[in-house]
Amino acid sequence: MQDIVKTKTKATELVSKKNNNNNQIQKIETNEGSNNGTAWPNFIKNIEQQSKETAETYNKRIRSFASFVMEKYEYNLDVLIDNLQKNQNVSPYQVLSGYVVYLNQKGTVSPLTIKQRVNTARNFMEFCDIEISDRKFRQKVKSPRIIMKDKEALTKQDIVEILNTCADIRLKTYVHLLAATGMRAGEALSIRLCDLDLDADLSTIFIRGKYTKTKRDRTVFLTQEVSKQIKSWLEYKYRRRRRVYYDRTTGKAKWEYMTPVKNPENLIFSSWHGSTSSSIDSLHTHLGYAFGRMLDRIDGRMREREDSNVANGRRRITLHSFRRFVKTTISDLGYSDYSEFFIGHNGSTYYRKSGKEQADLFKKIEPHLTFLDISALERRGADTQTKIEELEAINQTLRQKDSMKEDTIATLSDTISTLSDKVTQLTQEMELVKKRQTNMTA
Image (tube, rainbow, N blue to C red; front, side):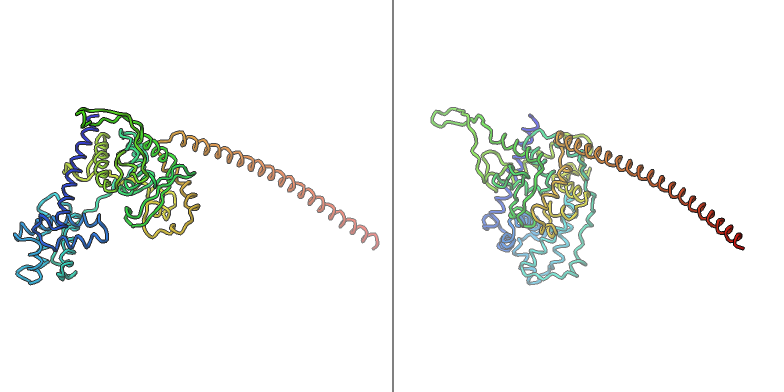
C-alpha cells in the first residue's frame, strides 16, 4: 500500500511538473511572458500544423537552445537570427558547434539527444532563412559519436514474471495489452470504450490514426486471454463504490454509494471520471512511473539501467520492449510480413490481405502471445498430444500395411522363381525329346 501511495505521489509530481512546462509552452506560443521575440513561437506554430506532439518536442529543444544563446551571447533568439542574417561576427556553424560543446559539457545529455537538439536548432535557423550548407555543416559541426547499445530481449517467462508482479489491475491490464499486441505505449492509452469489440468471436481494438506514428487507422486482434483481462479491468473500474464528498450546506463530509456511468468516449485506462484525450500524457507519466517501480521489485536484470553509472538513466526494459517481443515472436514463426502489419509499420504487403486471411493468421499466432491462461494452454497441449497419438496410430497402420505388402511381394517373388525353374526344366526336357526324335529318324 505504501509503495502504491508513493508511486501516485511521485507520478503526480511529474504530471504537475509537465503541466507547468506545458503552461510555459503556451505562454511562448502566445508571446506572453517571453523575451525571445517572434521567431521561436512562429517556428513552433509552423510545426504544430503537422503534429502537436512533434511541436511540443521541438519546443523543449528550442528552449534548451535559447538558454545556450542567452548564456553564451547574452541576447535572445531574435537578435541571434538578426545577427546571422547580417553576418555580424557570428556564423551558424560557429553557433551550432558551440551548442554541441555546451550540451556535451553538461554530462547528462546522451550523444543521440545532442544530435537531435542540434538538428532542431539547425532547422530553426533554416526556417528563419539562414542558409546552411550540408557539406560545411558536416565539416564544422562535430557531434559525439552515438554508441548503439543492444536492446534487452524479453522472453515469454520474463513477461509472465512481470505480469504476476503487477499489483495494480490497471497497470497489469496495460502491460498485458502491450505484450499481446505490440502496440506503442501512446496507442494503447488512446483507446476508448467505443473502440473495443470484445463480444465478437475474435475480439478487436480500433486504433485512431490520430494517435499512431504512421497516422493511419488500424484494427488489432486480441487474444482471448487479454480480452478477458480488459473485461475484468472495466468491471472493476465501473464497479459500485462508496463516494465521499464535501457538503457545502452543512460544512460536513458525506458519503454515498454510486456506480460510474460508462461514456463511450471514455479512455479505458483513465480514472472512472476521466474521459478527455488531453489526459493521455498524464496517463503515460503515471503508468510509466508505476511500471518502473514494479520492475524495481523484481530481482535481477529487470531492474538494471543501460548505464549503471547513472542513477536515473534509461532502463534496460521499457514499455517498448514488449513491442520488440511481439515483432520477434511473429517473425520467428515465419510470418515476417504479417508481423510488420500487426505492429503497425508502414508498407506491409498484408495491408492488401482480406480480414479473414488476417484473422486466420492471427489464430495460428495466438497461442504464442498467451501468457497466463494456463487452462487454455493445457487444452491446446492436450489437443496437440491427441493429434500426435492419432498420427502415431496412422503411422503404425501404414507400417503394418507396408510390412504386409513386403510379405506379399516376397511370396510373389518366390512363386515367380519357382515357376521360372519349372519353365527352365520343361525347356530342357523338350530339347532332350527333340534330340531323341532326331536320332531315331537318322
